[in-house]
Amino acid sequence: MSKVLEDSSLVETADKLAKYLHVVLSVEYDIDVIDRVAKARRFDDFLEAIYNALRRKFTVERKIRDKMSEANEREKEFLNSALNYIKNFNPSDIEILRSRLIAQSSSIKEIASYIGSKSIASTVLFDNLRRIFGGEG
Image (cartoon, rainbow, N blue to C red):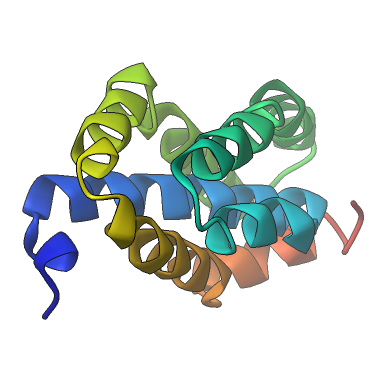
């Protein structure tokens, strides 16, 4: 295992970001937001990609909340899980990514690819959110 992926705090934070991106993909089906993070090779590009992804936060939250009123109990569970993924990625996580990666610029490609890969991996949540949103973007 590489040194960057041995840093449990960094991996935990990367996983939170991947889950957030997974929700964005599930709700808006915009793979470009994930590609920008996954393909970042420089620190400033990585932070800019995260910023651009987080700009979607309020729109995605609104879309999820709008679906709550018409959702059945099982669908509400998936929608609530998605909202929790969004809420679990917060400013302190951005600081963890920044502080851990700024000293290891060679690790940006690795962690960016890791986040991108995890965020596009299909899950039950993804499949159900896509069904709830009817493939709409």
